[in-house]
Image 1 (cartoon, rainbow, N blue to C red):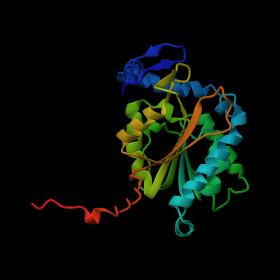
Image 2 (cartoon, rainbow, N blue to C red; image 1 turned 180 degrees about the horizontal axis):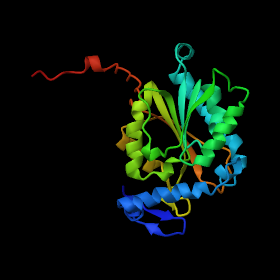
Image 3 (tube, rainbow, N blue to C red; image 1 turned 135 degrees about the horizontal axis):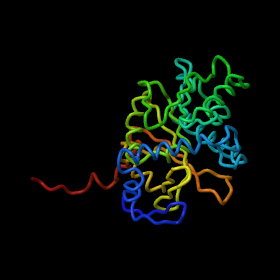
Image 4 (cartoon, one colour; image 1 turned 120 degrees about the horizontal axis):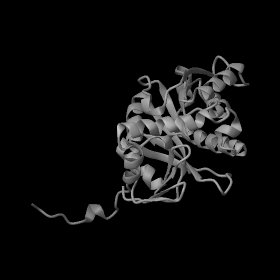
Length: 277
């Protein structure tokens, strides 16, 4: 990919390949890359302000915009009859303290599995969700809590209607990004889809030297989606965040290409002369 980028200290890289070669170009560097990322979050308090980087005020607009997006996807891809015959199940990747599960996913899905590599975040999520909330009943509950990093996780076959991935994919190298999605496809039920919600760089990429993550541009993401064999079914920009933060975008991704609208038949085509062979 021919796209220049920067790190958080302003250092330039000509291409993502140059950056990844330096940061994770051999097994020991790659191991250290992931170890440093988890170590950063292990030093963060397991509360709203901690997991949102000091911007707890973005929780409400984040959930509101995600819910609007989810409602659109539900109306187009799921029907009420489907939920009656089998439970709707979602995987919350990079679940942190269970913020998105508690405030959104558990209200729409019968079962939620949480995936999070930082143990004290996951324990907080388990405790919070065990206390219950208004919608957390026998019909809507957190089921499994996996303390496993994305790059090492393989879901059970055809378990999930939706795999929700928010503010965590930036910790994966391009190679592991593609590998994760290819493995995760098997975890989707027929008609299921991914929702990826992430920070977006204006162009190229931005490497964060502190938490060991990469913010990719929209074009960068779309190239990786293509390598994963995924298609953008629908996308939506996040609204209502402070201007000093990265832009945020949501993508609904499917394994099947979007259906094209039938082309209108030309009224003149029937009278067009043919060449006789």
